[in-house]
Length: 166
Image (cartoon, rainbow, N blue to C red; front, side, top):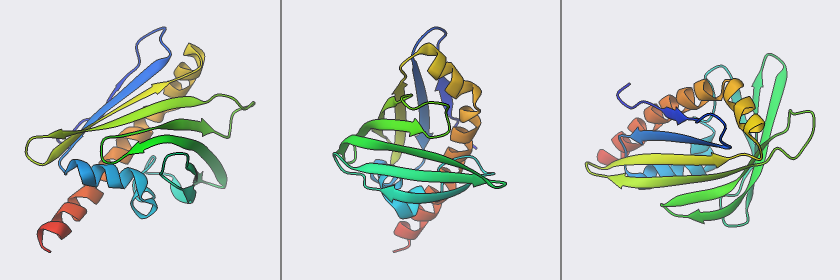
């Protein structure tokens, strides 16, 4: 793949940044993050089955989705604080599988228009603690994000192809 996912997690900091370019228009990359029928096709690692219980990508809306593998379910949920089409999404993110609640992540995803009908996505996550951030990194999230974005590349390629032939 020409586009590489870059995950930056500096030691002793509570934040993590993901940067990724896509060979698709910014509006289409944005739509893939807010439309359930697109979102379900690409989020998460290749070996997990994805289902969406709720995805209401508007200011004040909420989301909930589940990944399944081998009889195990992993539930994720959060809320949207701002959805500014096609520029950015700001919201919270939680994983239901931790021993206690309250490990909320605040995230901001920016969609930058690039020349040649391309898009750069920059996602910044801020965690309550360095331990929370390090736990997320150690969970294998980098592999899941990279595999998900590779699936998104394939989905975008189909979407761009279908709009080009229309």
